[in-house]
Image 1: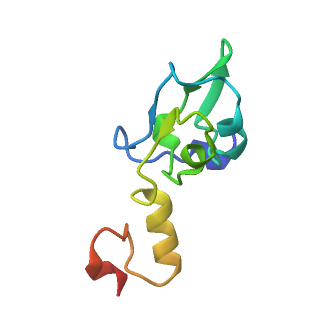
Image 2: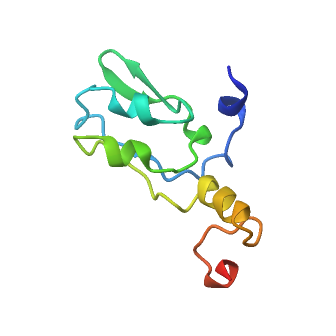
Amino acid sequence: MNRMRSMLYLKDVVTLAYSPETCTGCGTCLQVCPREVLRRSNGKIEIALRDACIECGACQRNCPQGALTVKAGVGCASAIMNQMLGRKAACCGVDENCLS
């Protein structure tokens, strides 16, 4: 397991949701997920490492069937980017006070 993949988000708080009945198994989400959260199993995609998801939204934006949803920008990735931009640490962009 690579180091990035082993870094997990907070347990059971990720907004990632998957609709297996909508999935065609095309694998586009596997190509765009930076954290290897998803895997292919029996011709379909499944969530393998939910807590590794940083809620970047790449899977949802690239799924042609709409089988994946996530509240992009509310999670870890957003907080890291805001901190890099000099905003308050742990800022997720939801609280307007942290964006100053």
